[in-house]
Structures are given as structure tokens and as C-alpha cells.
Length: 444
Image 1 (tube, rainbow, N blue to C red):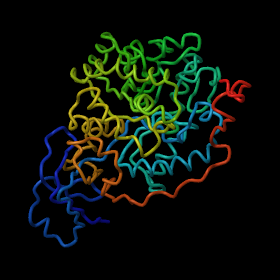
Image 2 (image 1 turned 30 degrees about the horizontal axis):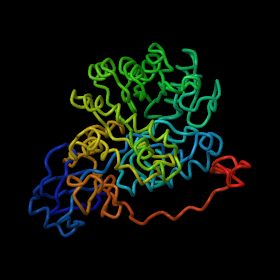
Image 3 (image 1 turned 45 degrees about the horizontal axis):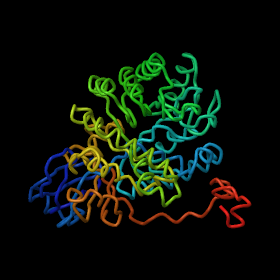
Image 4 (image 1 turned 180 degrees about the horizontal axis):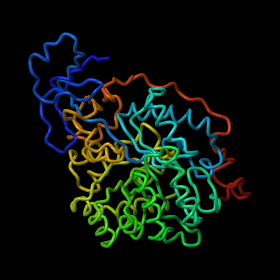
């Protein structure tokens, strides 16, 4: 059945490919973008067109968030995430949160690891129009070794907990990759680095061998599925690139050897610095310790120069906000990674937009199919009251998002109903610190 065509006319177009903005129109329907630029008068005369006057507005592709934990529901701690979630309710709430992400102008996202393997079900529900949400690609449980990723002793020595599955032998690695692919994941994710409690001062260290990483990649690639890695030190980024990983999340604290491996293999990176920046800049508002804020600020400062070198060397750079935690709630901070690319890496706003649109389409496994205003692309786009090239922060103001389209369909601007508290869903605390005798008597 033919669908009505929509014409957004007289706007300033940002094509998502890094080219200078230009005046023009966009014609599209649910099959995709039909034409961009100047329109044939015979087309614009069609009385059946849905017309949007974008005079004084900017039109651009929808943002794509290459690192979004849609099933976590904004936990305040790993304890909450691992022990206070239920599969059925988590799936329902994830659908609610996906709508919030969409209304923030995000028309696609990658959730590379999720609790209870729920990503596959949510993705399928979105694609079947059961629930509203952006385009989605997904992994299952993130694969970890017994060291425990960033959760340490909260994770078991075998089996699953929260968003992770612990594997050891070659046989376990192969079996888990195959299991996830059987249920329908788009990506396999590996937690390549983690924190060892007695070595916490060293930060995250590599907890997989190069040989183990190659087992993951060889098994996944044989079945046509790409691999993403959480890498927050130099050796992990180097070995993930050497092993053939298709996407690296973070890639912080790189050295020259790690950069050389990225360049040689052309491995895309998703720095995902929004969480760190929010904690560093606004941690006082949520009672974060000054020491923790300084650690995360240092990660940005000590990584920015090498990440910029990677960009200059041609390594694809994608935007990912790591939304899904209390510090990065859904629908609030997806734009901020673009801001950091401009402020910390020195990219132009147009270059940052490209990282969040046409380049980020790699995370959806849709590179060259969405993320650009170009005939033949999917019609995933925004009409913005303001100029994100003049001020990239405008993309964070949802009041300026006048129209959002996914697959040529208009997205409702009606906000979701406010949630009420759910019994047992959040961690309850008696207090932020211990009540001592001295405190009670005004002495401490």
C-alpha cells in the first residue's frame, strides 16, 4: 500500500556527511528519502503531500547513540542492577525508556549488552511496531572472565548475573557465542578490561588474553556477527584491534602501540565519555566524592589527545552516551558526546554531527543506509528550531525538536506518563554515612 509523501521545505539542511549546510527541501515517505535539495515543481504541486514549512529551521538526520544500555533503567549502583531487577518488568520498562530515547531525537541506538538477554525481544517488538522506539541493534549478556569486569566480587565465578556471563575455557567461550547468535543478537560484546580489587589503583586492566579474544572473534565472524569490546586501557585496545574486533567502546588511555593497531585495522571507536563528564562536572549535585570526580576527569584529559590522533589518522569515530545509569538517564544526555567531541577533541560541530549520524550507523549495521540526508537513505530525520552548527548544545533541548521521523513516520511529541515508584526496584539506603556518637552530639 502506497504511503503519503512528506515534504519538508525551505529549511537549512545538515546532511550528516560533514558537508556545509545548504538551503533546500527533503521529500520522503516510508520507503525512504526520495529527493533532497531543489524540488521539481511538479512534485511540490502535488496536493496529496504532507507539507512542513522549515523556514528558519535546520533539518538533519536523527542522532544515533552507539552506546546505550536500554535495559538497565538508571541504576545507582551495580548492587541495584544485579539484585533488584526482574526480567518481565525490566522488559516492560525498557520499552517505556526506548520511547524517551526516541523523543530526545535519537532515531537509532546500539545496546551491546543487556540484562537477561532482553535486547533481542525489545528490538523485535520495536521492529514489529508493538512498541515505539528508535531503530535498535543489540547484544546479549556481555562476556566476562572470572575476574569480574567492573563489578568484581558481585559477579559469580560461573554463570550469569545482571548483564554479564562468565566464561573460562575455549569450549565455554565458543558455546556462549553460539548461544547468543542462536537467540538472534546483532553483536557479541566482551568486557576486555576490568578492575581487580587489590590493584584498583591501576585502574582497569586487561582480563582476556589475545588468544581468547581471537576465539570470540573467529567464532562470531564465522557466523556473520560482529564483536564489540569494552576497553579502558592501552593493551586491551591494542589486542582487541589485533584480534579483529569490529567496534571498541571507550579506547581510553591508549598508547602509540594501541593507536597503531587501530589505524592498521581501521577499527571504529566509541569513546563514551558522557558518563565521565557528567560525574566530573555535576557530581556535586549527586553527592559524588571529589576523589571519584577527579578520576573521571583525568580519564577524559589523559585520553583526548590520543583519541584526536586516531581521528586524524582516519579511525572512524562514533558517538555513544552510555545512557542507562543514574548519571546518564534516558532522553537527557544523548547529545553531550557531540559536545565533548567539539570541546575536548577539537572537532567542528559538523564533524561531531557526522560522528552521531552517518558514522554511528555502523553501530546499527546500517552504514550507508541511514544517518544522512541523501536519496535512497532511510527517512530518519529531525527538524530543529535552532542551529546546532552554531551551538551543538541545542540538540539537548527537546523543546527545539519540532519534528522527529523514523522510517518516514512522524513520532508523537506527547511525553510519556510519569512513573510512580516500584516496590523493590531501587536500592534503599538507611543513610549516606554512619551515624556516630560524635555526629549526634555535634562533634563530627
